Length: 144
Image 1 (cartoon, rainbow, N blue to C red):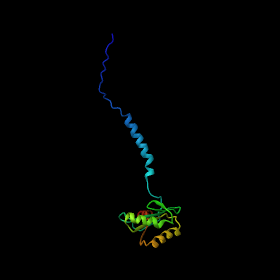
Image 2 (cartoon, one colour; image 1 turned 90 degrees about the vertical axis):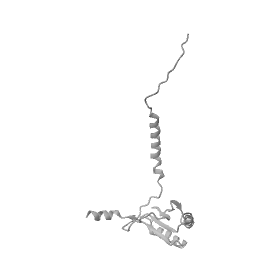
Image 3 (cartoon, rainbow, N blue to C red; image 1 turned 60 degrees about the vertical axis):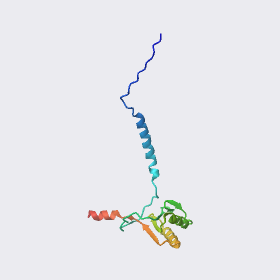
């Protein structure tokens, strides 16, 4: 004669968090790997100056010239040949006429003047030159 099996289930008092920890660690690793890839912008070592920094973030088109002489219009690579069309397209898209030129401190003077000349030939009158703030000299003065 067989005995009927009666199973009784009890409530578990312990919480198993192993799966939760596994998921959290995987997400942490994914974010640690992808965070450096999300940085936008071109690495530029701006020339330093004592001039006062702009108070507010200005709206306009940013043209960047990197160490190798590469030209970028709003972080999108552009050749010198098609600079005019790229700038005009961004002017229409952003509805602005202001252009800011960021150039690495090691860029040849002729390259920067060539870009400025093309912008002036296009009729752009408002060209701003972006520089870094010279904190080193200010900190030396404050030590004295």
